[in-house]
Image (cartoon, rainbow, N blue to C red; front, top):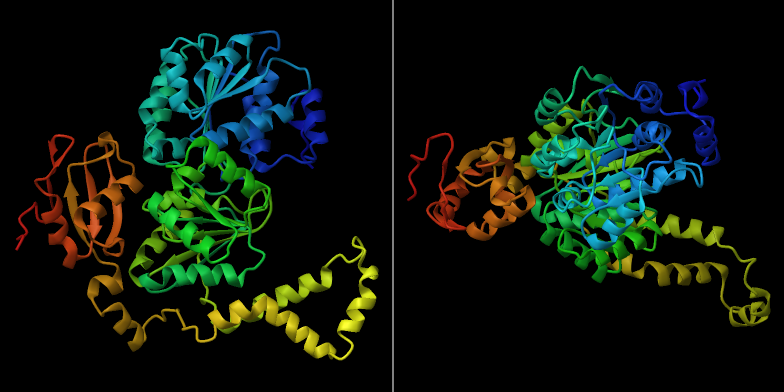
Length: 546
């Protein structure tokens, strides 16, 4: 059996992780730690989220840094505040009490003056988000001259969020580093370019298959019509009464709308997205971690770096624009050896995108039926009866009230009492689902083809493509760009397919019937003083606009 001792770790660190309950290193830890303890080798670690990557780089860093130094010797860069705080918390647990200077998290959304004061007190390791770190560098508030080890954690996420130039700036400002360690769940071409530019003969370790999904996650999908998507979400939630999960939506507006509708209907749920203040985000996350909230609705950007134990389900209200993003969504569940379920709600025309994700992850998605109204009621009923039988009646002084209860129910049969209890609990469900329709879209049936409209592009997933001279350099990320073009064109989101964004240009998949309306709404208009140019990507803009 592999042990932490056999990896070459300091006995003090081994004692710390053992006291935390870690008995055997994970596969990425077994492969990474011996290499990283050499201290001078560039390293690439490809592994899914939830496989123990923080300990894989955190323990070697703690062994390498000199406890007496007051200047940062190691730098960990990660995409989000949540992940920044999580890494710092974990590494502070790993290190022995009183050993070395503190590990400091620096991130946006918190006063920079306090972080500058903490830096002046002396730190050994800095964990930072790119934007705040660059701010500190430009203010000359952080000295990176003595940085010997740089870690890029969730590198693919940072590139997806548009941090490529920031990462390059940070690496240029750590000229005296001994080694660069890069950890990522996927290996897109942009990351490969960074490794070739800034790494020298890196050791590359892959746990599982590159871009593959976590083997502990059951990937499922159900097929419905677009206008039934919200109702399907409710049924999935109602059919899993013990669910503790995250619902992923594509835009901030959609995220908030879903959370508000479900809250009004009595669900313990809240939203987390980019428009919330840091105080609001912290409040929502604290409620979710403590399980006062059963569900969280999140955008991809807001959820990056969230590491919450025990998440049973991830629900993809819609598939992400980028198939690689699905890896990070589903990775919120099935962590640390636990099992989890990731469910995708898709329409018939989105099936080709589901196949793209399957090919990327090299994982098969299992079709499931959308539960019927009777299925939901039955599942809820048995869940309630189990709770009833498992209720703790020893802690309360119920014997005091027993004579009164016996008197009250003297003329009521046991069956009637059970019926009344069930009525109090289930009237809402029974009434809501009494005439519930079948929301499943069955492939190939005449009824399905009629529902879909029997149009070629809807049934097969075929779209036309539009070119537009707007991209990430204009301040857009995919969710904000999607909202922008929908607002401009007044088209429903259902007519769009994949959106590919580059620095200066983007390509939009759109149903052919809606193409001209989109072009009329955007082509020739101005954005921040620049004329928008939009045309049919396949025909070079020669399509008639009549």
